[in-house]
Structure formats: C-alpha cells, structure tokens
Image (cartoon, rainbow, N blue to C red; front, side):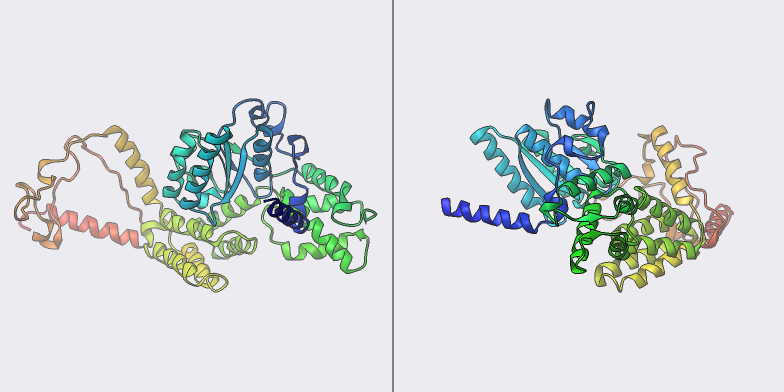
Length: 441
C-alpha cells in the first residue's frame, strides 16, 4: 500500500509538472479569484455558502471564467469530496457510480460529495433526469456548468432544484490581475529573471475577450516561443505571432459569441446571403460547435421562412444529417448551402404567430369538449361516428364541417401570409373551402 501511494504521489507530481499554466496557477481561495465579485464578494452567494449550507448550482457563462475553480474552492473550504465529470464523455452509468460512492461516504464518515458536471447541456433530458433524485435527497451537491442558455438547454425540473448563477466574462482589469499574479510566480514555469514589454499584458487582456484561461495559455505559448528564439523578454512580436492562429476567437468583447449568433440570425431573417455567410464563417472559424449553428438554422428555417418555402427546413435538416455523417471540414459545404438557401428564401412568420395565438386560445379554452362526431370509435369494424362526414368521399377531398369545439366561435388561430409557396397554399385552401360551401357539389 505504501509503495502504491508513493507511485501515485510521483505520478501526481509528474502530471502537475506537465499541466498547463492555467491549471498550475488555479486559485485555491476566493481571495485569489479574479473577477466574479458579484459571487465572491462580501455579499456574494458563493462566499455566503462557505459560512452556511451549500446548495446545488447551475453556473452559466463563457468559457475560462472560473466555473470549475469556484466549484473546487467551495468543495475544499466546506469539506466536501470533489468529483469532476464532463457530459461530453460521461453518461448515466458514471452518474450512478458517483452517486453510489457518495452514499458510501455518507455512511462511512458522514462526508458529502460535490459533483462538478461540466458541459451539462450536453446531457439529453433523460440523462439530466437521472440527476434529480440524487440532488433532491442530498446524495450529491451538483455544480453544473454550461456555456449555453440554461433555460433552453437544462430541464426545468433540474433548474427548479438548483440555484442559477451567471459567471460573467472577466473584465480587462481582472485578466491583467491574473497575468500579474502568474508573472510574480514566473520562476515556477519560466525564467525567474524573465522580462516583458510593458504593454504586453494589456494587449493580451484586450485580445482574449474575458477568458482568463485563454490569457494564461497565450502567456505560456509566448514563453515557449521566446525560449525557441533564445529570448528572455516576452514581446509584442511574440504575442502577435501566438495570436495569429486565434484571430477568430469569439469572446474578444466578452459577449461577442452571442453578438455573432444574433447577427447571423438577423441576417438570415433579413434575406442577406452575403452577411449570413460571413457571420456563419466567423462562428465556425471561431470554434463554435457546428451543431449549435445547425440547431439555430433549423429553428429559423421554420420560424422565419416557414410555409413560404417549406423546403428551407428540409435543406437545414439535410445539412444537419450531412454534418453528423461526414463531419468537418467537408460538412462546411452543405452547411453553407443551407445558410444561403434560408437567407435567399421568401420569409413568413405565420407559424410563430399561430403558436402565439394558440397559447392564448389554450388559456381561454383549456377544457373544451370534443364534438361527439369527432370522438374516437375503435370497437368492432372501423366505423365513422354518426354525423361525421369523411372528406375523401367528397369532391376535392374536402367537405365543410366544424372541427373546433362548439364553444369556440369566431376563433382563428392561423392566418397565412402572401409570401412564396404559402400564398399558393392559402389560395388552394380557400378555393376548396369555397367549393365545399357551394350547393350541389
């Protein structure tokens, strides 16, 4: 056992030496955390938790802003065992294993477990539901982390059991503070007598868009580059060389990822293929998950094109299938095809407007009775209820007949537009309705 412990300790030390700079310099206390004062300050909820009971949390916000660090600090400060999983490579089996181990800790030494689940939005609804009983009965304290909108990507049942906390992009001042702290410890990762250009930290902070982890990665790459050139001074030239491959980084202004997404969506809606393709390119080059882009396109093919050109949704869905089948970079071609098709297609939001009207109608008529002739009949041979008229027995496969409940007079939910194919669809429907009202048909 002693030998095993020695090997484990040696292995941990070796991993620590090879770990990225951001890991080596990870803050150990709230006082060392730069930024997030709304959570860690005197009246912040994280600081309050250290004095009282720790609750399950869903952190949402950009990458590299300290979500994992905060979870580790809380676990260490209050004496919880810390377990870290990523939803990218974990599933129900791993969650149940962690929960079983957590129960054993409670039973053996009365110690709780904090599970940090990164990329929690990658879990589907069924996988997220597995977490519910363990969070509910206190088997696990869950700290989930997501870079997506939690109201869309996280189950409402899980959200209702957790505190929802926003982790904000770091300010330039906070990023500079992280870099300065790393610089005071440069003997641990570079040359203790190393120098730097005076303006280099400000320049890094400007370019990394509030991502502290990325800032430390840039600093580390600059040091490696300087060593390769036998230099003991980190210069602006080194920074420019390192950042060349990162010129499309999304969060240069903190919320730029969301701004790019918004510009992309508005360009699709505004029928500007050039702009839509440009913002699509920016998103993809900056490292956005291509599935995220395709989800947005499928939604807007239905929301903004809709019945004016139903093929828009078909093209978007086909591009999703192509992405799953061949992956990048080849999938850029069908993805770009979908972008151009949706942007160039005629626009109609009649589907969305109909859903809005539907919500109003459902509130007003939540329990209206189904007309007798529309009710289900499944006994014996298939029979049609007395009073029901079978549309296929009439010319044009249409017959004038009431389908809404009897108490819903003068209700119209769908109003078609005069755009694209929807115009012809509505015209054909009106023609069939008119013919159905004509006598002797």
